[in-house]
Length: 464
Image (cartoon, rainbow, N blue to C red; front, side, top):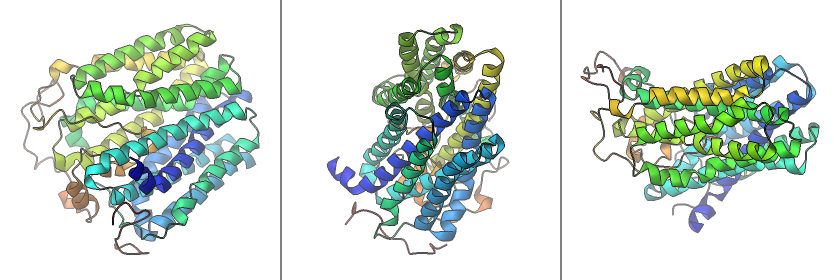
């Protein structure tokens, strides 16, 4: 592990700085608008705009990296994101803030893609899981530290925006100073939405529900805590403890996931989320102790849904389709995370702040209804299922290239599908796909060369 940290410390530091800035910015904007008595609809819209930018960046990032190279793409995006962050302090017009949030999301997605492709290039095949875990820890730790900055600096002045811009400036340093040649650009994996909707519908439902819930949490939980009477320092502690819960639950979740039926676990965790959110959903004024305890347990289970859905879907998809599956899951999550804050923001505006956790409870119950373990036929289950559970970084801090780092995805498949140009004729053709007698997870019957350099090792000395 020490060798891994030494080899990848630059990339981990860059990820840490990015997520500190991103986590702090989201909470700052929510608290700033709450202090200005702005409708919760705008707070939700800002988070939705951020996720829309992330989804958009997943499409644009490949082209940008292929056009100018990894280092230039990363540096340009970090500069643009830093400028967009400071732009929030120059203008108070909320529609302009929506545009700036799209730009921040788009730029950060391109940065994620550069870091993840670089990590994949450097990681040896038998150490990808450890490298991936380090990336996940850096991501979660950055989000937690971003909240704790509010404890040390509770003022909501422009100084916090300067700190966010400072983080995005510092994340440039290890990339800009590298003496290594950066990797070849990766191409987008072919999307096969109709195939995956038929093959893994329950997994996609869980990912969509997770996006609705977690996207709303990041955007509106600071506003909810503020409207409960918490000070800025207490809001930072509340958000930090909730995000920390998402980190600590990943390892016990892996133990459970490898030993018990994953569909049943998803249903149990969804039901647990509905129960944990209920006190916060029905009480207009929540005692501080109850707020922290209930919020922690809600986050403990809500951050389990996405990793379980990823593991469950991989159990029922062949190895040569898992790169496309990862892209499909992240797009589905992004759609949910874009819609969720808008809907929850409207509900909070009309019926009060407690509607945020009522929203969580409702969609958790929808998942309880939607996920039916007995309907899983296992017709397409892979031979070695259940695959080993892998702790996933928060979907706010990963890109479609996260498939490169997932040890469940064969490295050769990544090389074939994402380093060779994609032929549109090779994309999924529903007419060429044989009809499946029974769905795997459902209950019905259906079925350029790099402009800067060539391809060499990059960034660290992970390989001789």
